[in-house]
Amino acid sequence: MRNKLNHLGKQKIPFLFIIDFDVKKYSITPLNQLNDNILYSIDGFSNIAPNTYFKKANPFLKKKPSVLPDTELLLNK
Image 1 (cartoon, rainbow, N blue to C red):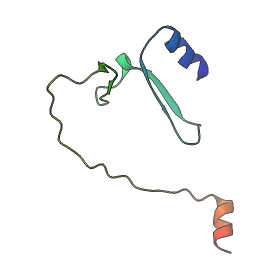
Image 2: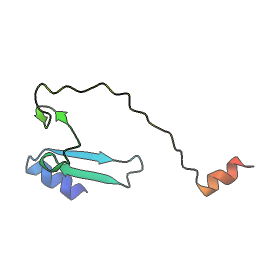
Image 3: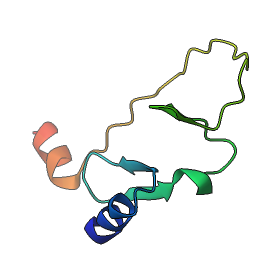
């Protein structure tokens, strides 16, 4: 992970870096290789066409806490 971040940074290649809370899963993708379904606008770099209208959306996020076996045992005591 660190090598790829350093390489892209040294080459001055803009990229999207996403990492999970546990620092176990991550994605490092140069902006020019992003899927068309991912829109971004960061410090003048964008893949959104000018004058594009977006309907305001209220994203719905669900909490799904994972219960580890040890934690579950403690909760059931």
